[in-house]
Length: 296
Image (tube, rainbow, N blue to C red; front, side, top):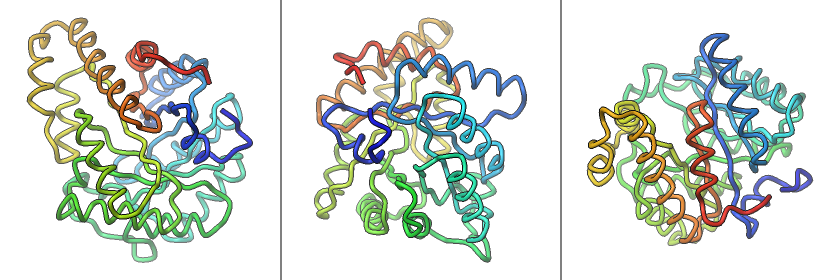
């Protein structure tokens, strides 16, 4: 990985990219756990790391602060998250200024979930933006950042169809997104079908698959529900026998994720983006199990 190159160039390079996503902790104990995970994953030299906003944009300040610390106190390359939720255009430019001042040059531009949570009605800020491609255009128009966006292998829960969802990905690319990162999913065919739909529209933007290590069946099922899509029966059937055995479930969940990652890389995915849940063990085990894992 070369920090002199644009992030999109490293994602599009011949060697797969590997990246890790964290969420902003709610208290000091959570922040200590987060920094432990960051330090344990740092030696793997990921292509980039990112920190999400909380539900409804509720943790904006903490997200920005942690991203700034990653930029100034670690060897990692951070990607700042930015959402439209509850923010005017001036607010968005202010956050971008904070990122730029800390040396953050990569932004993941997202519409974000409604303040009421996934499934609640979406209401844009009166002085803000309504769609993800509008935010992409705002960030890209500054000429300072490499901009990424979101994609959904199973379709966004508010989308009318998978075809319409692919149109949105193309719109984000035309607005200035240089790559997209997908929501988590469990079946490789869902990812490849998304890529095929995007390519059929003449769009060659890199599509980085998002991976959620499975360490808790109830937790992952709940998160899948929030995304609007259940965990596939084929995955549930592999995990249910271990429902009362946490160690066994983590081991099987890690195997399920590793098999998915291998299939994605073998099929030509440009890399893997891990939703770590602020834990390093499962992510490191998956990373180390991949065959082969390139030295970056």
